[in-house]
Image 1: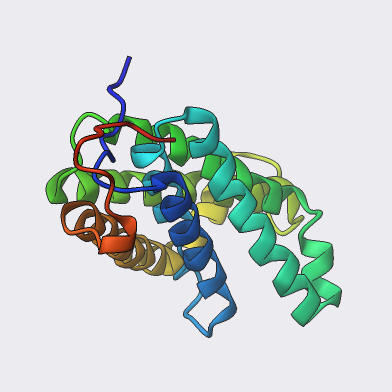
Image 2 (image 1 turned 60 degrees about the vertical axis):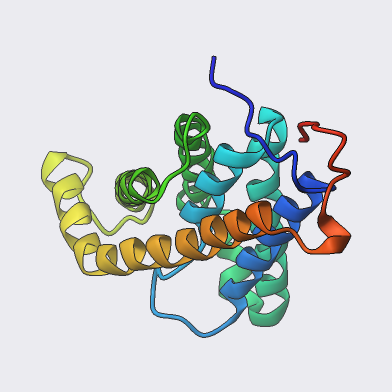
Length: 198
């Protein structure tokens, strides 16, 4: 059983984590290269830092859903239909898988480990979502050659997946570590009370 993350220096740590994940999700509304997105980093971050595993799993999914609904309202039409597709459902599935991966960071969060987990999460996202494209898009033959073609077609986007995951992991993990080590007065926990949150 992995240890509980220590957020005892922060007051209302779960709210801080939730706010950071939601803000990251809403950056999807900004112009960005294809696949340069926060989802994988959000999932790793939630898995690493929420003490309660249920919230580690739920929060990134809810943040993703909120950003999807906003995007659907802005873009309508094709994007709204895309939300109901199997390949988009597998994006949500990949968030769950990467959150479970993030539980492995709970023992020790450090730059090298976050880098390794971010690269692994990016690869998992690539494998899961391109499998979904092969399965549901109708663009590829339903055989091993078609699956290989789907993965080959996804390779040009993979670099952006990796760069996006590393960028957002740096912001989320780095920003939270800064808050944890040097909390502003309004977030600092009572020094006489060492509690764990989440």
